Length: 293
Image (cartoon, rainbow, N blue to C red):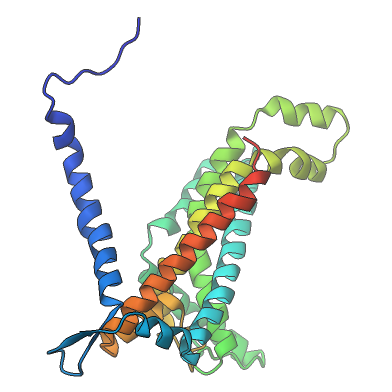
């Protein structure tokens, strides 16, 4: 006998999903449509007249050396954040999955950073690595290392990568730990009985069985690195020094809010969305083949 939920009122299911649909329409689809429309328009300096310019905004954006620099910075920044955040989350999950004393407290403390807002996370790292008031920043200066992220683009990139990665490690840790705990212990014990070393057990058995979790986190971390790191960059470096940390999402905000170039900013947001969609499609097309379900 099949049991299923029956709604005597046909309108009730639609009322239940209406709030979520309203949120999606108002905060996702409507802004996206507005960005597409605005990307083919151009306003005069006073914002009194709007003219249709077709793809001129896209042509200007894609030939702008500052935008190409932001594209390069975003590629380096995103790759570093994804690799560092995912590898650190996996390492911590493997450590927490072992039978160690105080594992419950250890897991709880590792989850906390995920509840920290990006701007707050950036402020914490600022007080650590600031060249004059930061603990490690001052220590590096006394050790003879000329550390100053306000003047060096390399130092600024290192700092924003560390702060953004630290913010995302807890999310990766949770999913990796859940994936590790879902692996049957009998498989690991059988490999141990057959004489496989711990490293062989991890790379030959554990890591392949974690491929669905790894694939999911790869997609999530790509989206995070491209979109959700605005607060970190804005609070730490504001895209500087000399645009060394100006990512695509930060340039969209700068040109739209600061420079009031709504057409160019909208074109940049459309290009950014297409880039992320393309990366996601490539991951599903090629990387998912190596996932063991």
